Image (cartoon, rainbow, N blue to C red):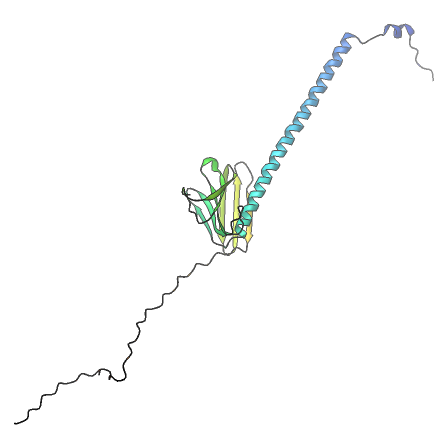
Length: 217
């Protein structure tokens, strides 16, 4: 098969690219570079969003795990109140983050930014007083729902952050603490008087007085 004939004079005159070809190449290269940088930027943003999501997910998982162990390690004396502050308190729990043998732990949703906090200490009351020594940990902000239901030996927890899917979990085996019965006071018994055997006991029957006997002198 014969090769196509190419004139030597044409090859000799073809020394470089024309200006139009160079401009077209630069334009194409610019389009490719812009597309490449856009894809890299998009990949970087997606990685940042994924990292933030993983951090939030890890934080939420840690929070729910801590709440789970606070309840499962408690004595069953769990108080739930939904007034101006949604809160749940474990009067005694062995799950302490600050090495307290028997800690009181409360999970409270504050009004500011709807922040969920964990309060740990000993024998404190809510709202806190100045002399209360407690440790307060911020769990998450923007809490739209925090409900706890305790029925018999089951505890249901519902936690939701604004714009997020609700998180629910149930615990079993957390029996309600029995109310302590007030001790019955023993009746006061007056000690019986000891009787002298030489002295006869007083008669219970009434005695009639005897008239004096008169004698003649």
